Amino acid sequence: MSENVVGICSLPLAIATNFLIDGKDYLVPMAIEEPSVVAGASHGAKLVREGGGFTTEATPPLMIGQIQVLDLTDPYEALERVLDAKGRLLEEANKVDPVIVGLGGGARDIEPRVIDSPRGPMLVLHLLYDVRDAMGANVINTTLETIAPLVEEITGGRVNLRIISNLADRRLARAQATVPQEALTFDGFEGKEVVERILEAHAFAQADPYRAATHNKGIMNGIDGLALATGNDWRAIEAGAHAYAARNGRYSPLTSWHEDERGNLRGSIELPISVGIVGGATRANPTAKVALKILGVNSARELARVMAAVGLAQNLAALRALATEGIQRGHMALHARNVALSVGVPEEYLDRVVDQMVEERKIRPDRAQEIARKLESSR
Image (cartoon, rainbow, N blue to C red; front, side, top):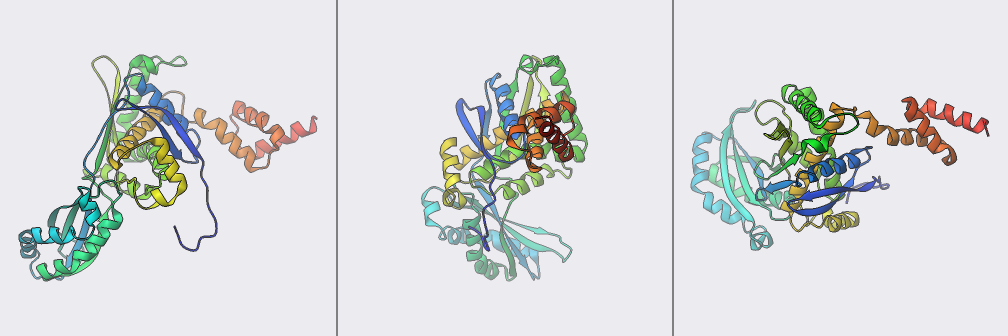
């Protein structure tokens, strides 16, 4: 699967629960090492379940491939030639992978545009390609390289880059959810107050890109965990999500939250998600195959819809914790255990060392060692 391999770097594989999505229950596999992420996603999904679960949708799996054309005397004239030859280009593109075409996918359109760059104007062709249940990188890159000589013939220019775009803004996934106000009541916090605090936290992310970056990072905790578990390219999903968050010229949150007329909390998410359930690591990696079986999805679009719901649940859980008890309470026990293990605290003392560090709110390697030494000396 890679080069110069010397070993395997493992991550915990966990199951997030409580997800009710479009009337169907899901167990969501997640590969992630960060404490409280899986618990947060499960709790967020539980809150949403109180309001009837998630409602999701996904657009057709259209990916974008880019061809860069240079050394043109008149880029706009070349653009017109491309438009005139669009049918020919699409016909050649659809000869590359007859299997995908036979399944109902294939090249859908060619969109040429002239862009300015530090090295002058250039013509860029966007190939829109329906990849069905694949992520799509391999078929698109192969198709672009195949039709590049024809593009040079049509335009009279020189093709340089031929590559997929990870800003997959034609392949969007969306999720919506309602959380009843009363479901947010806990530990002395009234539901109405929690709704207001979450809306204040969301407004912070809307107004400030520094906060929006962390807001979106929390969303991607869940989405990346599911992507990694199912053998999908989480780096491509990350790139597309953050580019989409900045599509209007300012980096913004990927979710939206508001209070409905009944005082309930309503949230939504929209982002590009390019995933597959066939090909690549999804079939080469046995763990990914098991994860997909646990999840029980039947198409790449269904996987994308589940990912959107997971991202929304993760964001809900994070905002609720941040705006009320603080984020550290959920992290503390697992973090304390990791710290204790990292300095070699014996198994027989582990629970007591962890409990004492959490109680003291002093979760440090030196404190773990100090507590363990005292326990040893008191035997």
